[in-house]
Length: 145
Length: 145
DNA sequence: TTATTAAAAGACAAAAAGGTCTTTTAATAT
DNA sequence: ATATTAAAAGACCTTTTTGTCTTTTAATAA
Image (cartoon, rainbow over all chains, first blue to last red; front, side):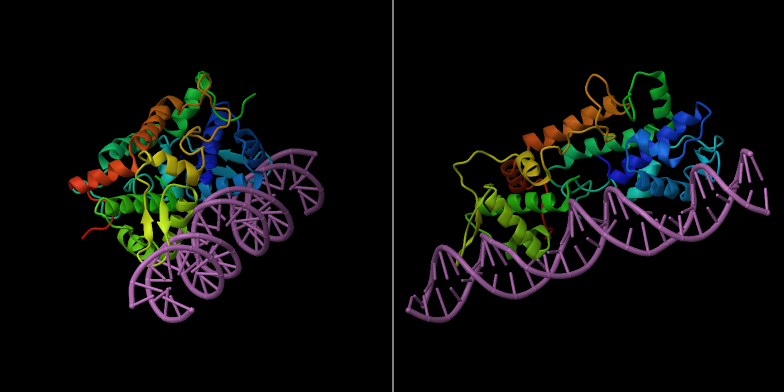
């Protein structure tokens, strides 16, 4: 569904949120282990997320990643757009440049509602809502214990 | 939705089928132009499709690509599986290895039906059905004139 | 103020995807 | 037979994605 970078970013953000709800502030090594992602790549991705303003960090002892709680919930779509670009999940299913709403390809009528569902999913779900779902314990997310 | 190779393969196959319905047998140059894909890359992809048994070809004068009409319609899914592998559109939306039907991630309930719709779309639509849809003239497919 | 800790920055590299081009092989027409 | 045509084969290249590692900077604790 998503590319690796987006996957790791979303899992990392949700993990930080889950830990923050417990009053903790995880670092790269912990995050990478818990979301089952490569250590250094995870570091690079988390740093990019900080630079893009999605979360914050502090260096040094006791440092790690955390969210500014005064900001509104973060929809998955915002992260996806920042990493994969605005065109993700928007074009023709067949890759046709000329496929539009009024003159479209044979797949359009079947594909359009699917595309809309994906967009709805990533718009309504947020890093925070997924962390809350996880805390309720009905779902897994991240590493199995 | 699909990667470039799959896109070009599907468009190429549908174009060959459309031409075959007119009694024609297009070559690489014509196919590449009409499906708006890179010439040599299209050639390579069409050759792979022949080697994989999806369609046939003849060399030399009057040569080109064509389908064995005795064979059943070709679902898009068969082509996608051959190019992208069996795992395409099958895994967890979050990329979790441990996400299963009975113990799943927070996105599962929302993502599963979407994934099913995609699988249904590529299973029910065939190269031939798309070519017929195009012939009926309601849709565009391939290049605009 | 020094040692330690952990993120930031950035160089580097492997693998995959996407694409180009030349040479060879086979079919057909003259 | 020979010339011509067009796919097959395969070498080669570029870009993107994914990943690794070292050095630098900043925060904290002793």
